[in-house]
Picture 1 (cartoon, rainbow, N blue to C red):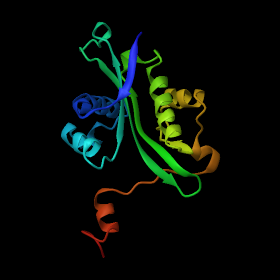
Picture 2 (cartoon, rainbow, N blue to C red; picture 1 turned 120 degrees about the vertical axis):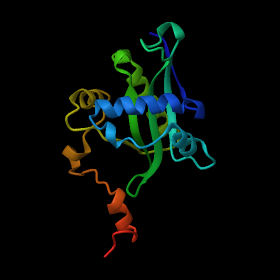
Picture 3 (cartoon, one colour; picture 1 turned 30 degrees about the vertical axis):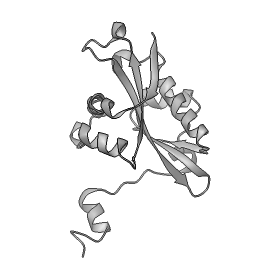
Length: 173
């Protein structure tokens, strides 16, 4: 199957929003999605973007059963390692289920890695749910390894009321 990988544009955010929800449903966390396509447009395509997008697109002849030609995406941003220097963090890599196994996910991941290499990044980081064996196996087959297993690091998060409290706002004692 022919497909292209290209840089995302603001006009892609409606389709990316749809795929973010599909990913959240797959990950059994749809209630966690709070972002709209308008916020994606603002956050990714303003003068100071918070993220970059890659879009996987097929021809009209190969569109999805629901009529979509944008069938996958990768969302990433630059970060920094105090040990290694420039780094890239991939927040999402998603391919619609009916297009999996056709090389699209591998092509998206490869392009994210190329972007990192072109920018002089020393590493690419991302997370995978522990129960998602298919994704873990895919990433392992591409030469990626489990940071938690190998080095003992755990991904931590602070958000919502806890973040406001930590910042000294509402809920502070």
